[in-house]
Length: 338
Image (cartoon, rainbow, N blue to C red):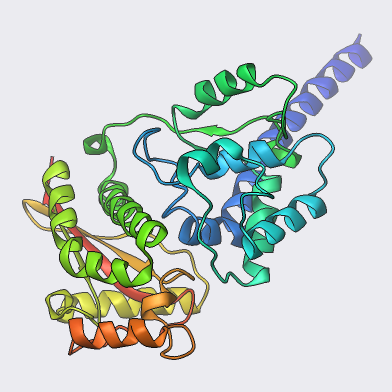
């Protein structure tokens, strides 16, 4: 009897340990995903166009999860997926496109000079982990899959840890979010609107026309998002292009803080400062490859005609000389406390 009780107890303890190990495993996988360099690179380089939060109709490119589902099936290895991503980024063209519907709707993506290492890390992350998807995506994908059953590439089965599953974004009122996350949402949705219009202009008219967009329309669009969110939304820099974006002393301190965090490869979270009635949230603006067309090194990244136009539009321009993955400035978002 005692032996039976001991055996039962051992089984119980073992099952508890197994349960804890499963929880720990899930936690470890989540930590591994958050610490994967491809996650930040994807968010910084890809989400301007391939946003996971934009609506189905108000976007300029498919979400990243759509790319994953169309490119990966049970027979695609990680090495092949990375090779496919490299080939497409190096030479985007209609003949080689695997997402014909996206090309018909959005056109072929503009060619951009991403370092191979960046593409590898992003593709590695996409292959192994669950990635964010818009709330409308699953229904849309299943509907399209039903229309084209048995045709085309991909069957929606992601490989590795993210196989066949993708993280659903919860619909939460921004006012219910913690202040830091709320300010971040306000800044990122504003960035998405600016990015959508900027990339749309580049796709249709080229980089020169995009300069005019930034000069004339960036402020009105930012102000319109401020009205939508009932908040004050600013972009400021220690090296401003437009002197209206010049950071004050307090903002310069936060810019320096974010630069230090980035150089030390530490996790970057919004900085939240509260007063009696208001909240200020600060978050860095980090350069990516697209930024360098106008904010990179003259002659190396910035073409002569673009440089000439910049000089004419912004005589006091200081916002040049950047490399990829540097802090160019910060978002300063303020709103009333709940």
